[in-house]
Image 1 (cartoon, rainbow, N blue to C red):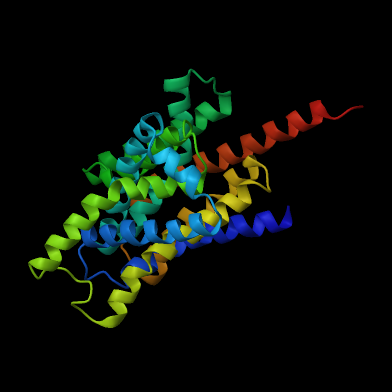
Image 2 (cartoon, rainbow, N blue to C red):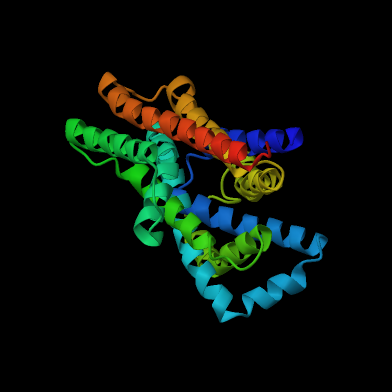
Length: 296
């Protein structure tokens, strides 16, 4: 279990500091970065699939419409999520991206209630309510809907929802998603390369290396996450996931000096209180379940 905790910390910490990687190529348009992320992720995943001898399973999945229709929707959601995230990071909105991933667990709970008629315990309702108050407060006092945070939260939340119906493993699934997006990504990159607006191999060498490295940067945290999920309880994974948006927030405030006013602090405080209450409630519920299951 100890190894699983370290795998989880590694995954969430990697996602938390990911904005620093995208900042290294902030001069490249976000759509081009996403295009390269798709291409290099697919190639990296293909190497893993061949190495692990899972090609036949991947090929059969890619030829099944029943499987494909799930992953087409997942691919569209994660593609939009990546585009908004990378654009927001390089446009100086790292703090707001962190808000999106702070909200995401509570949105997932709300989706469970709306779509699957799941029943929430009283403290869970309070948590969801506090987060909603925080978002409404920010919208009213700032005069603008925090669309970056909400877009990231909703696209990733629905992506997670779609993945609940995923019929194949996470490695092959992500390869299939990136494979579905591969043709439009390659087409777009070919056009930008032909008209002279493409950055890859047309700027400095380090930019090209960082763009090609997007595949490894995308895949490694996912592999750590998958390894952790097999070794430690989901409740613990749920608590550790807040490492990621916390690090994103700190990266935005401390490293890149993004503006963060007292007005914003109040709105974020509602969300943070909601998450603390949510985490406490989950731990308490788990301990009660364990106590009931233990023989006297």
